[in-house]
Length: 415
Image (cartoon, rainbow, N blue to C red; front, side, top):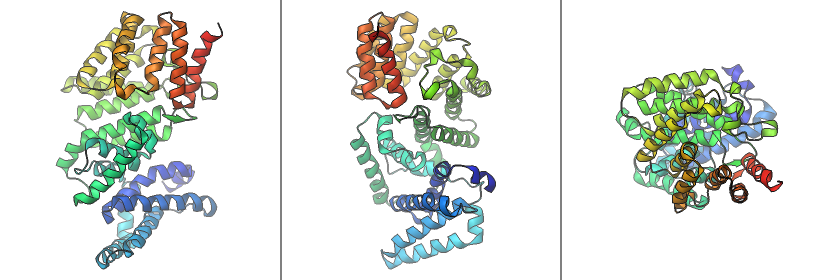
């Protein structure tokens, strides 16, 4: 394991270890905000020192010890009672037995931190936002994009979440089995959002952030292992597998975006598709169907089509119809409009898009313009398509998406 860690790029190693160390420090010192600051300082110290001095034999133990020292420094500025507690906690870091158990490769606190962040003092939305910061490592802007809210609104939400935990007086610790069951829905939402941001980054020069999507899949596997009978956990894992299976075909030369219909399907990961299809096929008949299972079923229909023309859009439309009945999500309605256009014609899809114009959650989102542009192109309104392709390009923060949308617009501008 140590040899393997030495081969991992430092930034990837820190992304993997930081939430694990944060969980350990929060559980020990019971102060999330201070612990987050301490772990960030430890990570910064590692990023500066390790390239110059070499990596420690146990990177996680190194980060834990440095963060604990920062916490001890913080505690010494407070009351004598807090000082004594911090000194006891700091001594545990140097205890061989503690180090062996907490810093062993098999002891992964990241999943523990997921459940810890879904704190009873928080609303579900605030818990998800806080977890995305602590576990997923997403920026405030990325989280705001995922929630379809302005960045200042999300910054305030995260700040209030930390303050609510502090004021609640409820210990920030590993929840009981019953509490974990109550928080599971929020945890799954977090994992879904982390995967989504990793699969299609909301900003930057790269279409995807593989470290995020792979971490979301790893954590979802852990949840599935601990909750093998939960159909929505299985559905979420299947959805991730079936979606991620297309990753190699999504970009071309220079990282250019390739839409689903134009992808070379021989590049799709057949082993992942088989695993995802088997998982959702075994899950759907077992009980009540939830949103993640339906999304996985839709992904399976796409993945099982040998060619884009073979896609069973009627089945996809029926699945999206079920999904939108149980989910007040404008993105679901947007995808339903696309499926309706593929089954009933572009005019039907455009009619459904008109109804979404008044939804404030989509007011400045590039996907509404991008979908409208595509459907206008199918309807033969190339002037309108150009206008909306350009509008969508102006609203996305993703460089590959922007380049793709501008390229689509340029096809008609040059004619």
